Length: 168
Image (cartoon, rainbow, N blue to C red; front, side, top):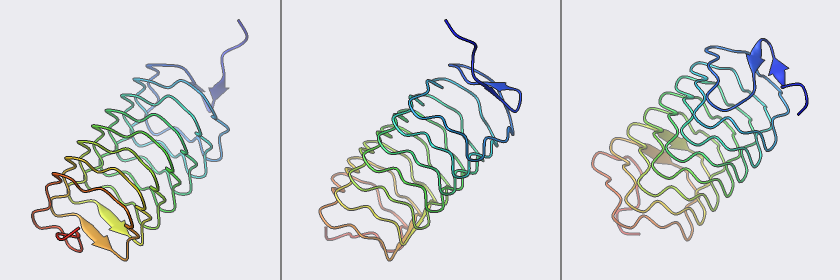
């Protein structure tokens, strides 16, 4: 076993607790941060491709420009998180909570988001092409200028949603 990875005083490991930590531009490809509490963390432009982030608390975090392709975010808490321009292509976010999150210009192409909460989320100019949003909750969400070709909205809840494709 090698020395554990520590960035700005935060040990990168499952169930770590590092509130408001600065992890901008961090190279965290394939790390295991399952069950970690990174509430309010700054992960702008961080590389989290293929990372295990199951059950992580990223509420209020800044993930603008982060690379989360093929990341595992099942049951993750991203309430109120900023994800401007974040790349979540092929990510697994089933049962995650993105309520009040800002996903402006984010890439969610081919994302698997079954039963995910997008209550009050902003998905403006977001790429949802081929995303799977089975049973997702889009109540009061804003979808303006989204690319949603071949997106699946089966059994999604869309009350009060602006721009949701009610006729998909």
